[in-house]
Length: 236
Image (tube, rainbow, N blue to C red; front, side, top):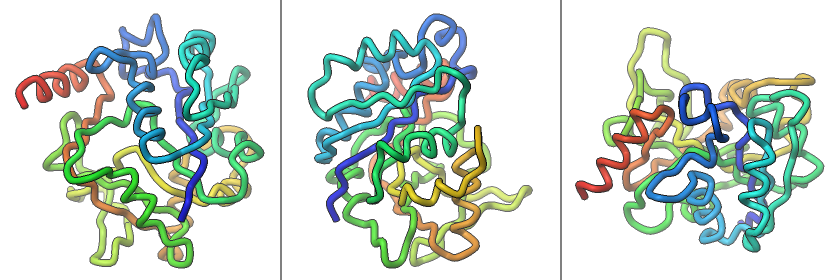
């Protein structure tokens, strides 16, 4: 199916990336010589996305000034100046901009080295709205650069996702990108809430799926993770 719109989650304060985020928003932190958000927008442009909604809060003016000159994809700002709304609340606020058709949501710090072909294009092609309400890009924890903890999900042979138990270690990580039906967020609570609330509802009905990515995902949540990712690329 054709997906025209995406939302980049760029409003957070990036507290784990301090001290870098004491003076800039996390999406402007440099990676491979360019701000993180530029890598994200390049991926979306390459995948044929026409319009991207970007939510802003922390150092919003600097972030908005940086992305304003970009022509493709077309950028629309969803401001959260009054209060942070977390991932779910941010999408809910932007529903009028996102429309009714499935969209991509993309964390502004999600970066990777491609394996075979485009992971983002394969994610779009893999989304089947008859069977699934959300399709998450999933990374192998063993091949991830940066902090992975105990992993995020189990995945069955058909791709359905379930959460790990509190004492379990699982092999799969959410890689920060998904295709999802935006209408799911309309019933979320007012104010801030996490997309985890939506995922839990979908897992209960068997409509949350994952697709394993190829290549190497880099979890750049902290300055040390960022340095590890840069070192890994230099050594390729």
